[in-house]
Picture: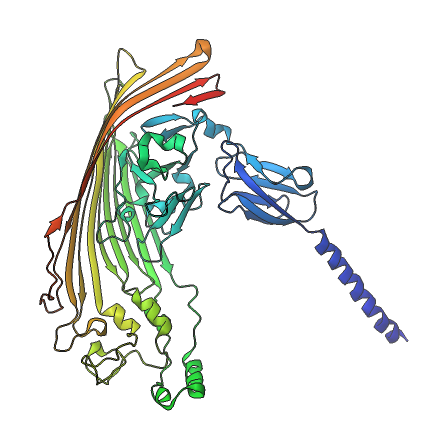
Length: 583
């Protein structure tokens, strides 16, 4: 009898539990909203949204939007972001279509770097964001822009690929042109950089040591960036490097080591699956071409890559003469075999203050040299499409470095004309090496007049020079460039030099008028920028050193050059810390 009672009770218990789960699920409320900066209404990327009292949370997308499930409409969301005051919002008590975060009080009183000088953050009329070293991204950082990835609202930093030193595409509030460059102007210690490619380097910014950088200031809108003219149409990124501390000797040593690997390969047919399909649907000739191997070509071309970055810096001061010296070394393998980057950088900074604090001198010198080898990226597509039933190496012929290739005795090369080439052979038989070098430096003098301390004269002399050389060598037996009779392969050179110079001078005057609760500052100046590039043109050669027919260049080199002369001015007026005017 008791068994019957239990048997009848069981469905009732299951029904009650199912009902409870249904109620629990129904109690969940999906909340969507947008977090914005109260100053300009722009969306805040990477802001944290957490349900108070729980570990449930999310982060805002690039445009500041978010979506989160909460237990009920009485739930409280805790919203926070770097340099903004934390805010708590009751879900049912406020519209979440747009929640504005106020900058923290400490950040409003900060002095921030802007174009040609600095100003109090609370006096800004344009959209300016600052990221200091304490907020930088951590880990294996090889190029400077990676330090601020995901750190600034409206600024996207998207990796260009997995190649060592590849760099990223930077966009400030999207692009403004379909055909012209959408890259922002980058200024490092007062020197505007040439963003054009340096021969032999994956990315020109890779020649700057991220460990030497103190802060980034991003000028995002027209008001903030207008002082730089049309060059700033895509925004401005101002990079400030570390200075001497003027105190006791300080030595800093850091070492970061990492391993990288492909997380997910392209899903393709295995050798057995490939054989099964060909045997089921192929012709007799196609079946005869099948091999007996089981080769994972993606596994053959990819590797677990090791990287080590080591930096040492010495800073201090000798009789009010602050200095900083740093040395950096990076060695990074790529996840694609034969990809490699080795970089050595040196920086020297001297920033004394003389004449009873009336003359400030900043001397910044930075130099970097790289040695690179670029893997043949054609192997990536080849690994996806090449026959997995064939072996990596073949003993059918002594040609082609011993690698398996599709052979056809009826052709002049002995290779099947339209067949793909061995992916590992594409990598190991191509030596694409570059040796770029770059140096950026300047001396900046800021003089505060004794008879009128509010008046400053600033002189900035700078340079940005680089040299890129390299060779591309492909063996004459490599299938990718094979020509019967020993005339095949490649043995080419390339070379480029750049000499960019800068001269800037401006006067600035700032005055507090406490009697009328006002403050104003004015600035006027002149800038001379000269950009000169020398591209060397070489003939093409086979691997044995024989010149390829009709490959002589028309000119040995060409020298594109342009000079930019600028006259600029700016005026700011503040009344009662409430009303701001900038021109």
